[in-house]
Length: 290
Image (cartoon, rainbow, N blue to C red; front, top):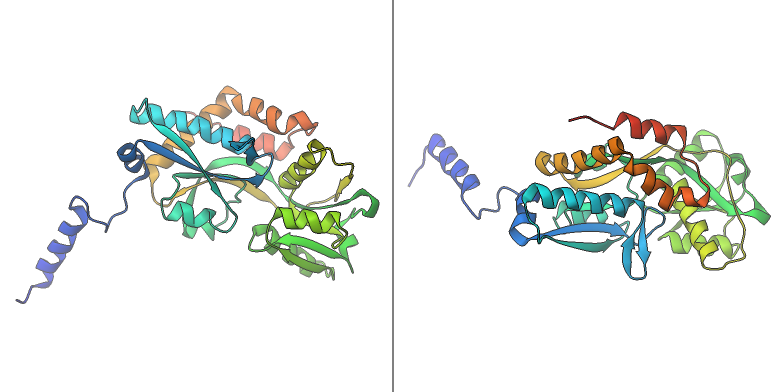
């Protein structure tokens, strides 16, 4: 039977709105309501923002997502909504959001235009920059000190791309060593296989904090400058304005009420690190009103 072009279009539109069809992705709020569960993706290796402590998800970003979970529960009226934490890695975090394996990702993820092709982001939750961690006995002060030396960086990260660009732009002939994760980067640094480990400053701070907490006698040093600007936010599914609005309202409420300062002090300020002017400005700018 031959169908006219108009008839075929009508049938296609009907398929899009039929219950149970897979042609339209289910919205995040609808998915949460259907299963009675809110799935939060988190990183296990991004202290102090997102890590594991005694087998539980912990950190600054994780606590933001706990507040968002409360907002989702209230919005949906699901008093018995279960909150499940799903451990993610650098490699699978984006796919987990795209595929709906998690409803939100709470780690240390930089907002980029390229990533916007795959996911959306909430309001920003932190601002940092890329720098280099070295051992105090073999300090990398200025980034030009990397000339002729070896520096590790995690492959397939914004830090890796930004470091390569900075070295090239400034004609610094460093030997860049790509590593799989932070554990490998720190091991190579502490063993003397590399002279520096490049990553986001806040994450490197977390590595140093963890080493001190474990009783290590090693002493670390940060470079005196940054090689990138890294704004962090939570990844959510693309083109889902309803869920993103619930999350953004929760974040803005934290900023307006000052609870973000308590979270900063608990996870970062307790180490004696004051918030940068850039971070303070970010908090103020995104304290959006209703």
